[in-house]
Image 1 (spheres, protein in one colour):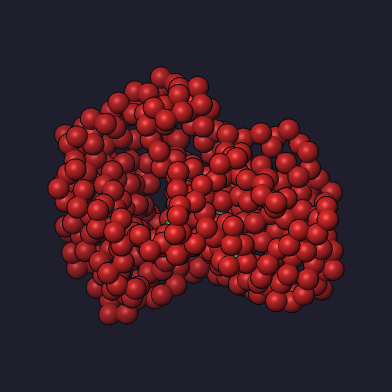
Image 2: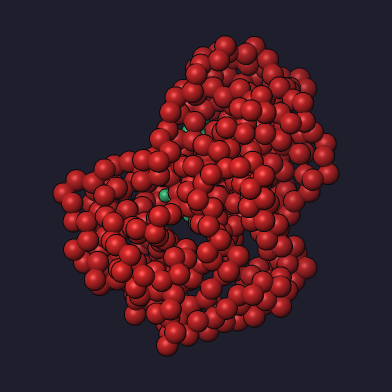
Length: 427
Ligand SMILES: Cc1cc2nc3c(=O)[nH]c(=O)nc-3n(C[C@H](O)[C@H](O)[C@H](O)COP(=O)(O)OP(=O)(O)OC[C@H]3O[C@@H](n4cnc5c(N)ncnc54)[C@H](O)[C@@H]3O)c2cc1C
C-alpha cells in the first residue's frame, strides 16, 4: 500500500473542480439558492427555464461538496427497505414512495441523454451481497415484494453462483438490482453546471451564505459578499449544512463517508473480481459500497470507517483492510487516492422537501443523492413556479429532530459501536 495517498477525489482527475468567473453581486433576485451540488443546480435549471432570475451561492468552488465526491452509484436507494416501509406506511404509500424512485432514476437517465452529458453513465445494475445467511432470506422476501408491486426484475443469486457477480467468498449470495446505474459523479456535476449556466443561472463561488431572514413576502439572504433580497430561497446544503440555517442544522445529520481508489488491476483481475462490472454493495450495518472505475481498470471502495480516528490516511488503511477481507488477493494492492465527504441523513431516513418560514429545503438524501438530490430539489423549484410536477411523496410536514441535537452528531460513535457489534455477532 502506498505510504501517503493523494487526498483528493479520484473523480477530480478527469473532472477537476474549478473556480467560476466572478459575476457582479446582485441586490435582488427572484430565487436565491444556497449550495451548488446536484440539488442546487438542478433546481436552478428548472427555475431559469421557467423564466426566473436565479442566483446560486456556493461557499467553496462549485460542486465541492458531496456531488463531486460520491461513489457514483445512481441507485435512488431508500434506507428503509420496501418490506419495512410497507409495515410503517402501508402498501399504497410504500409503493408510491418506491415508484418515485423508479421515476427519479429514469428521469436522471433521460436528462443525461437529452442534455448530452458525457458522464460515463453505465446501466450495469447492482449486486448486493448478503453478509449473513439470514440476510439472504430477508433479501429474497424483499425481492419478491419489489417484483410483485413495482414490476422490477430483481434477481436472487445463490452463493453457488455468486462468482458470476463477484470474485469473493465473503457473501452468502445476494440480490441483483438491474435498474441501477453507475456514473462518473464529477463529470455529471460538470454537465449539470454547464446546463445551468446555459439556462442563464448565475453561480457565485466562494460566497458563503451566513443567514436567511424573512422580509415581508420575500427574504433577505446575507452572504460574506453582501445582502441580496430574494422572493424565494432554496437551501440545498444537505450534509454541509451549517449555522447559517439553525433550523435545518437541527434536522440534518452530517455523516462522513470515505472512499479509496486502487491502482490499475488489469483486465484479468477485474474480470475475476467484478466480472459484470456492476455497482456493488452489501447488507452489513456498517456497509461498504464499491464499484469498478468507469474504465473498468481500478476499484473504488467506500464505507463509513467509524470515529476512532479522524485521520483520512488511517481511515484509508482501514478501508484497504476491509477491501482485502472481501478480496483476499488485494491484500497488498496499491491505493492511489482517498477522499471523504459528508452525506446528510434525517432521523426517519427519508429525503425531505419542506417549506419552513417560506424557505424551501431539499435535503436528507441519506447517502443516495445522485438520484434524489436532483429529483427532490427540482420538486422544490416546480413548487415555486406553481407547476403540478411539484407533487412528490417526499413533501413533508414532519421534519423531526431529537432532543439535544443541534447539528453535531455526538451519538455517532455509539451508533458505530452498536452497528459493528451487530455485524460481528450477526444480530
Ligand atoms: C463519499 C461519499 C460517497 C457517496 N456515494 C454515493 C453514491 O454512490 N450514490 C449516491 O446516490 N449518493 C452518494 N453519496 C451522496 C451524494 O453525493 C449526495 O447525497 C449528493 O451529492 C447531495 O447533493 P447536494 O447538492 O444536496 O449536496 P452537496 O453536493 O453536498 O452540496 C452542498 C453544497 O452546499 C455548500 N454550502 C453549504 N453551506 C453553505 C453556505 N452557508 N453558503 C454557501 N454554500 C454552502 C457546500 O459547500 C456544498 O458544495 C455519497 C456521498 C459521499 C460524501
